[in-house]
Image 1: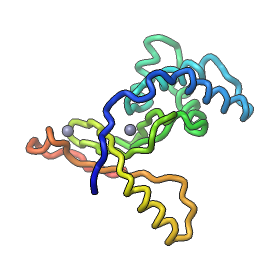
Image 2 (image 1 turned 90 degrees about the vertical axis):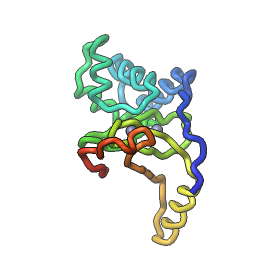
Image 3 (image 1 turned 90 degrees about the horizontal axis):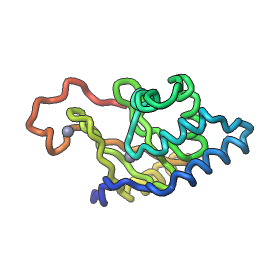
Amino acid sequence: MSVTKPSQEKPGCGDLSKELGAFRTYLKSNGYRVTREREAIAEAILRNHEHFDVDELFMELRSRKPISKASIYRAIPLMIKSGVLTEVYMEDGHMHYEKAYGREHHSHLRCLNCRRIFEFSAPELAQVEKRIARQEGFKSLGHKFEIWGLCSNCQGQIAPAKGGGS
Ligand SMILES: [Zn+2]
Ligand SMILES: [Zn+2]
């Protein structure tokens, strides 16, 4: 298949207020309070343009605000439901996330050696999703496609110690 542009640019840098607005709107319309803590977590997450996990976010937040990991774990599902955040991939037993607001659907290549993540979009995948869903009489709402292995820099180096799997 032909892989279209691997988007490594920083998308949606100027959309922070819109993204926060979308999150606030979700909270209010679903009976959740818009607390300072939730806003601080959301803002830190939405400023982050990389793929991240809770530990990384916690370390970053901790240097500025007394926010517990538990609060982060509680805020994340709300952010996912509000559509500003999405789950990306599992690594070492925990989930990694990225911003979703205003971003096009894309898939990931994950290097098991250097752990870099590469993004790509391939419209064929949407067609495969539709075809399989149709065959199975399934109403699809999305799909995930991930390739793990060794990036071009890491090929030729020692094989990774751990297999992938997600
Ligand atoms: Zn690599
Ligand atoms: Zn991504």
